[in-house]
Length: 85
Image (tube, rainbow, N blue to C red):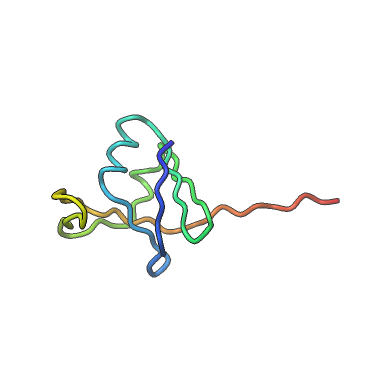
């Protein structure tokens, strides 16, 4: 499982760096996204299928010399169902 923290969704979507997507596919792992105190899991088998878009150009990382693309996913947080008493 690969954990990714996102500060805020934008227009109902979240952006994940390509290095996390590639690592999850290579290692056959799910991605768990945490955003504003809510979680969303992208299953390994759905990683490619659920992509809503990709940045048209790569972005330079603020803290290193790496360049990366962003993949966009619809943010669908998991809901917890309260048990009936």
